[in-house]
Image (cartoon, rainbow, N blue to C red; front, side):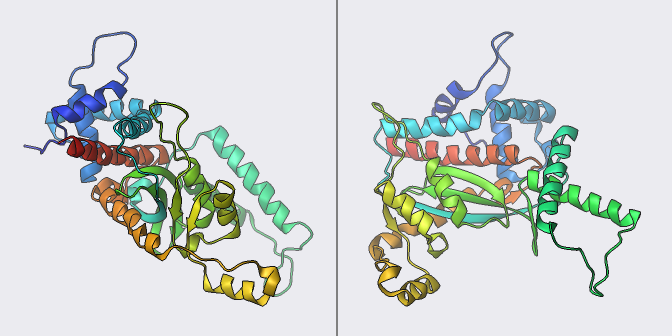
Length: 334
């Protein structure tokens, strides 16, 4: 018999966030279908391999698509964070930011893109390529103009459309194959606060501000809290833009300075600005986000991406984050 994941207390927290439709009878086996979604992402198996005790796999998959399109998993995660805030179980005194790369299975490739969307992507890519080549003749190694044969144009067109399809699916190509990258923020109790999903080759530093902007902790009274007391991150996030953003919001930066940045600052003398320092004691607490990444990847469907669309994978990621929150909430109650 397949091991169940939810208890009665878990279901009481989850059920209010599941839409069942305005008309028609109450869906049968709704809890079984939700547990089927959990089973799929926890095991990383194919939908077709789902045990019969969760119901027909096509029904469970269809229900997952409905919940995904309705942003149910996003609402569930936000609702659990709000419940934790109501119970005074949240802690934004220190937030840690980091990223992790997720290997994409070959099943994740080949996302279908509508004709209109693909045509728009191709047009935008052609304009970008034309802008890069403006004013420069395209020459081969011999210095002669390159005359592309019709077959060469066709091959380039196929490769371009393949790259655009991967870009739309948030998949990057590297030595290890197809990869995606999860950028996330964690509190001091190893619980996730926000996610940003990008292609695997995306740099960490540009996603620092988007991750922090997605932190929203709704309090019982007043506006949601979006500003942590301090933010810890490694040297990859050490940039003027990130530090300036934290300074404007009166957030303490716990980010060590890179050696090359320190050397360039010293070369400028007084024009280089003040030396950058960080709280070494607080920086030791940055491992909370790395330990959270290990918790997220306990589910094989999160450790490896099997989903073609980024929306499906992100829904599974938010589902795993929700389980971490309600497990901690119920443990605190006990």
